[in-house]
Length: 112
Length: 118
Image 1 (cartoon, each protein chain N blue to C red):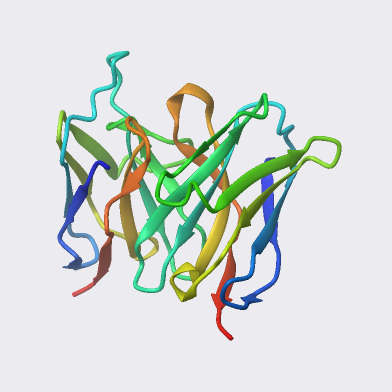
Image 2 (image 1 turned 120 degrees about the horizontal axis):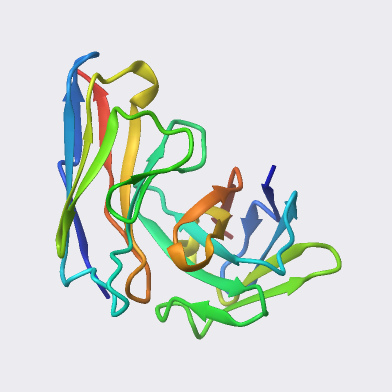
């Protein structure tokens, strides 16, 4: 299985500040079709996960441009600028290039 | 609007089977892919498997000997059965739509917490 190493586990931030979360995979996430299936989710307390970024850098419908994704191969980053209260929660990366799909262990974004 | 709703027992005894239903409204399950994902206490998330628009299935090899995902297109529902459960299967179970070739899960149910305990 592809191991997704997500860091940090906890990320204290100030409102209005910036946050950066890393996800590294144990093997390349470039599919044989040339696409990279690395996605980012936010799970707010009491809610189901919501898709933020798909295929590395594409914001899902309705996601503010404060969220951005980047990376390639085995190294990926989610950045959140101008953090707002509704951004707090648990962030996960998901790879769906290889079966079985695997998630990162999660990063809790919380107030400093 | 696509909506998914899980249902099933919240408590299952060890060695028994866990059966969950995902009811979908606003979209036909004869399109796209429909999956199950679980989140353990401690926050680890695991993809369980999915069923396609044609009824073919893909399962996580770690669970393959114990799981079955089926569907009833007349009711627009799909199902998860997990056999021989142990306390390690205690988790919140989510159903979700996997969007075609993009392979992300875009619409999720609210989740159902299942505890395995005698």
